[in-house]
Length: 337
Length: 291
Image (cartoon, rainbow over all chains, first blue to last red; front, side, top):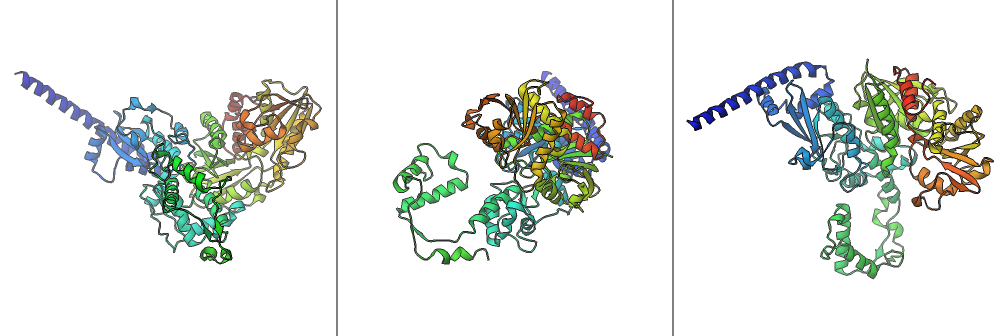
């Protein structure tokens, strides 16, 4: 008798839940068909994408919105849309690495403008000049943003990504390729157009791959000359070399103006291998991960200090013998032709 | 008809504080409710000048450069990067300090009218901000009597207008007669800020650099050049006595909250309907309401 009573109560609870969900779903659908209609196309398209409106039928979508919510990733952001009782949406916005953490474990925010400050430094307190670098700080959450607020917050975390994503979706992303961007530069950046195609490949490999930037590179050397470097898998496109790429290109354009020379260094095989490990560790941003006493790693600080003590002069330079007469005839000297 | 304000500034790849004044002034204007949207854009940060216009939804966009002078950035870089169609510096009809605004379209956004304004640095209201900065650093709302004021600029840059802006405001403030003496000084040309005490007879001199953000020049160069500190990392006192003169060093004028008023004035003169926001913002940021 008791068990059938509890079963009935459980059934009633399930029914009530289903009815509640149905009411919210109808309200949500009505809201989508009325309030959203007023929104600019770009914003509406993004909000619809967040809840997968083009990928699942209305019933499934609203069932999901009413229960656990619908979740999407945008760079390192995790957006979860749920239905409020009036049919409007509420959005939980946080770092994807904090997906499993409770709101109470995170620093909560309700003003989208806070996104600018969260995005300024990484978890180690270092300044992030590139907003789409994969170094977004963790530990925060916007638990209940409105539709308007979530788009604003996303635009502060990853400026212009929604606008460019929408243009790409509509088939009218205005890509500006390297040559056009480089030739447009003036002042101290005037020289960046001196980089050769091969050098532009190195540039993209240095700055634009997924490990460095979450945008998906859509620009190439020019419209007819694709770069071989992987474009990346990001949700949002990169339509033009950014200011960091231009600033780095200026430095490389200056360096690449030097002619190559041949040097003779004396190193043991292990020391040569160690220099290669140091190069990799710095290029891959791995230096901070190397344990204090891990002298098996060539980029370990003690290992580097030993090498410097043994091989470097007092001023830190590496004594090398410069081969006579090879300076101007080295192979790379014509790289800028 | 909705309207947006876009504040364009330099920004930095290295210094996170460079964009702080831009954000602060943008927030003041946001809070005033004068615009449907307010967005910041940067040469070195994001959104870039190149992509900012597509991030605003409004039809009428007022672009105000948070730069101290008319020159390379306001005349070449910003219009080029915003893709302003038909831009010609003649449209500002400026003598180097009198740029107003012009109305254009941008090639990458349809249906938007872009009102491109002169920089905040050469607007008349900037003189008030310099004076306000002097008030802030001395803690005296009536500062002037017995005081000298030095307006400091970078000096020889890509064009002569950078010095013109400094002289313009120094002259305007001098004419008010509020301070005993007012001088325009420079980092890289005569008269140099290094010898600040030599240019004044007053025992107290307020030094206000006409820079948008605090950074290398305002926090390291100028304090060390003037001798108010031997090592910028050790900081300095306000005031600090140098050769018998009390130097009240104010840091970048661009960090003064009243700057938001100059931004609003620029946009309003270009036709933005800002209602009573100018009066309210002046009042909130320490300026004189209704002035």
